[in-house]
View 1: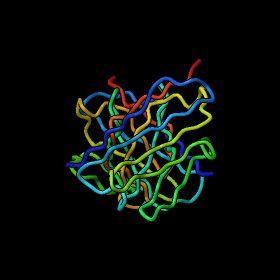
View 2: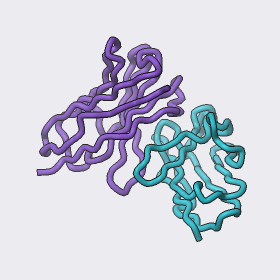
View 3: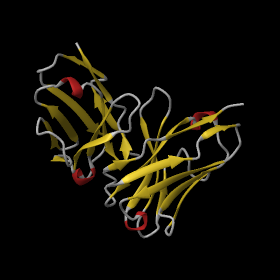
View 4: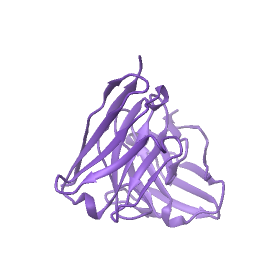
Length: 103
Length: 118
C-alpha cells in the first residue's frame, strides 16, 4: 500500500520568504499521477500542480513542482499573504498535509 | 462553467445508511473520472472512491464492501451509497472530477457533512 509522507508538518514563514514542501512516496510511483493541492479553512481543496510539475489553470508561476525518484517537492518562491494554507500531495491517496503558517 | 453541488449529508445513527448526491453542470459526468474524497473534522483528506468513464469502480480499503459509487447519466449526477456507517465515517464528503485515471482532481464541490452518532 502506497504511503505519502509530507514534511514538515508545519512550516512557519513570513510573507516574501521561500517555502519548500516535501512529499516522499513509500514506493516507486508514476509521476504523472502526483498532484499538489492547497486548502484554506472552510473551502474545498484547489489543484495547484499535476503530473508532478505542471501548473493547473490559473495558478501563479511562484508555485512549482519537482521530483527526484520517490521524493516530490512543492516550492512557493515568494509567499504571498493568500498562500498561507494547508498543502497536500496526492497519488490517488493523500499525504497528511503541511500547514504553512505566518511566522 | 463547471460546477459540482453535493447534497444528502446529515446525522445518521451507527449502522445506518445514507446516499450522497453530486449534481454536475458544465461537463458530462459519464465521460470523466469522478471521485469522492472525505475529510474528518480537523483532519486531512482521504480519497474514498472513483468511478471511471468506462464504469469501473475502486474503493479505499476503509469503505470497501460498505460504500457504493454510481452515476445517473441522464441526470448528470454522481452518487455515494453508504451503508453500515460508523463513527469514523463522520466527515465532510467532497465530489471531484478528473480527466483521467491519474485522479488529478481539477474541480471540486463544496462538500456535504455526514455525522454518524447516536
